[in-house]
Amino acid sequence: MDLRQLTYFLAIAEEGQITAAARRLNMAQPPLSQQMKALEEELGVELFLREPRSVTLTDAGEILYRRARQLITLADSTRREIGDFKSGLRGTLSIGTVSSSGSVILRPALRQFHDSHRGIRFEIYDGNTFHILDMLRKLIEIGIVRTPFKQEAFDCTFLPEEPMVLAYAGKDPNPEKEALTIHDLDGLPLIVYRRFNQLLLDVCEGHNLTPSILCRNDDARTTLLWAEAGLGYAVVPASALSPARLTTLQMKVIDEPRLYTRLAVITAKHRYLSGIAGQFIDALTKPEISLNDQALPMKEGYFFIDASGIARRLATGP
Image 1: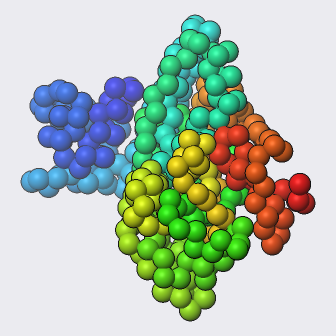
Image 2: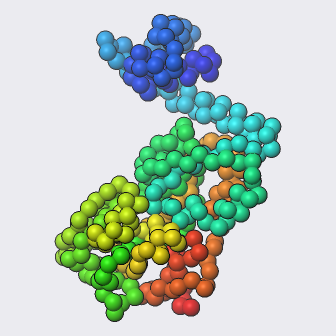
Image 3: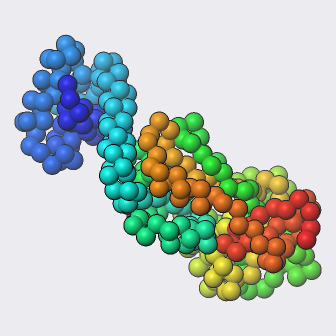
């Protein structure tokens, strides 16, 4: 049994068909079938239940699948660790980000990181939180996602909790208030990032309100583009608004205890984390609060929109 056979075995188990696995591995089907037969003979058990159009794992196959995944991950991590040693921390850093993290990935600290690590190139993959969790298994080293999500399989570093905000290019829904309540949203044509649709509905139901949702979509950037066009009022996490967006949109915090979220920087547990990835995470999570930025008064303190566009809670006012 070798790593090549385990790679073949994982492909068949995940594809559910030998033909599909052969396509994925870019090889002919007969040699792949021969390798699996040789593996079964070596182990003395059947690994697959073979049907005319599919294969499924036997109990023994399920055991091997778990161990094979660990072994392949360990081998991949070892290769990368040796590569880091040989290259002096040069190479490519693969990162998955949710669309509402735009202002975070462009923080000043990351520009400083780039200036001091000119040998590093970046591969950025956009997706929703659940897509990024899946990509951490095989494609990316670092994920930037939003709560809530199941955290057991990941090492997580959380950024400060932030409020949801109402962003708009048109009329201020309540000019007399610096922060809005959920009742101020009643009757407004809302543009909602689908990730938070159910949360918004639940909060409104708790206040005996039925929100007027004009548009639901899967991308925070689309949400803000619709608001910039004057089509309605966007409900998004505060950090979804980059400093550039704050020149075209007005923003008010929604003062509602349940409408809070936070970003998390995550990596897969039990996988080697390159030294450069660790340095990147340190730069990403470094506090960057500027007291020269505008403060938004709230019932429980103040929020600052810092230089990177993130709303941060302060214990007291300025």
